[in-house]
Image 1 (cartoon, each protein chain N blue to C red):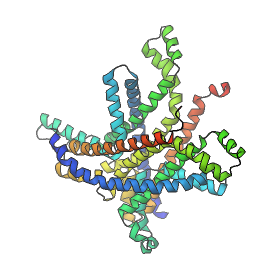
Image 2 (image 1 turned 180 degrees about the vertical axis):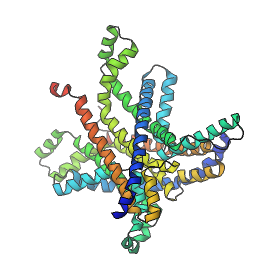
Image 3 (image 1 turned 90 degrees about the vertical axis):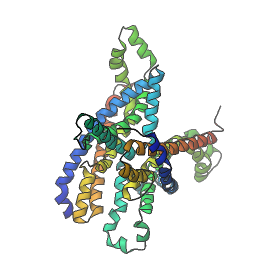
Image 4 (image 1 turned 45 degrees about the vertical axis):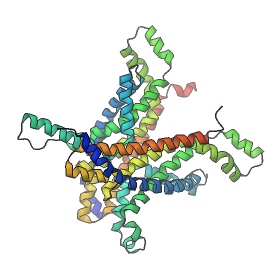
Length: 229
Length: 231
């Protein structure tokens, strides 16, 4: 066996072309998922049983099953139902790209909702009381007191979730798409040089995770600019 | 639901394969985690460097990619080694079950390294100094003083790692392990009911995860039994 460094240099640009798809999947799912998570966490902490229980069940199911199963259920599974194939939504649901976005968004929402809940619970109770003493309404307290602090507390865990989503996007190579992993697998099928090709792909992913870490570190500094003593 | 009944047997066998992978990978994960944490806490720059490279690489690379590197990489390496001994050999590989268990343990081991490192740091320094003053060797200190106190601190995070372990097994059909994703795939080609079949897979995973969550909760009560009253 010979390890060819030159093969890494040759395949890196081709694999990096797949990065465009990876990044698009990542950003879109992150935005949709986070918006969904905001709704979920409000339901979860509402204290109203008919709102908090469905949110709890949703979070439990999506965190308790593998992402790949969720992707397959949506991409392969939904085709089982005649009414879905007949509906106008089928234009979206037959595309692997949108199926992946839906699955990733639903999954990210469950994890992010739990992270945000942790952040909200971490806010000092005394601040609520101070807010009430100042005559702020419940929604004013949530928006101006709780939320900014909860976001700061949630950021490190949210950063980890962003990285986990980045790694999760590799699963689209199993539903016929050519992301970083998908491109690497096709080159690998031709060359059968697994170390060189897959390590090239890993380097691209490591670069992307590094960018995410930098972005999160920057955001953490920004959100804690008043905290530094 | 009638179609599922015919495939229950196949799903059961697939679930047993998953359990097998889980337990093999669990043992290896603990081993990698303890070695990694020890390396990160050691005074040796080389050991710390290797451990840092390990956790950075394995936590930043998709699970699927790690699995492919381990399985196809080991196959290429073993084949060329075998050809060196006997040129007539065509292809040698590690059985997918073992390659898969190994790959999953490497991934989760990187996370366990960080958890165990934090837990070791959580044990009061005075305990280690007391052990040394009593004449315990470093090895005895590890087994009788540090490990019994650190596992309690590592438990909540380690519970999450166990959930990751079981969920990562869903990838193994990619390298040809005959687990429940494989069963669902086979059942789908015959019955043409993909949603039903993958739903069964989801329910099986949800059951496994629920058992793990419950077990960890009971272990936490057990681990903190002496602290409950003291607080």
